[in-house]
Length: 132
Image 1 (cartoon, rainbow, N blue to C red):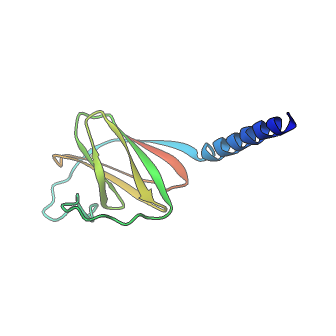
Image 2 (image 1 turned 90 degrees about the vertical axis):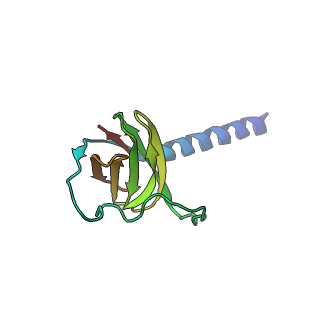
């Protein structure tokens, strides 16, 4: 009987330890308003690489964190983190991208190239970027 109670207590304490560690990361919501893309004849300075065009497997980075996006517009939105393409959000959709520790910027561009969003962040908080 004592052994069964001990096992239950250990399980409960481990569950509490893991749940408090996971929820310790501060949730941060950032409202990002769109702005019109300025006409320019050169390449977009915010984009280092576009969507992949081959099936080359990428190496798994260590120390990743997740960044959440909520698209409150009727536009398809391409997502870039530190200038690198991470995916596309559907209209009124949401998504999560995994990034390496220490990311500094997010940049989003509508598929038609007329609207853009940008903000700064890092892996010390659970960031959710709300695109309006």
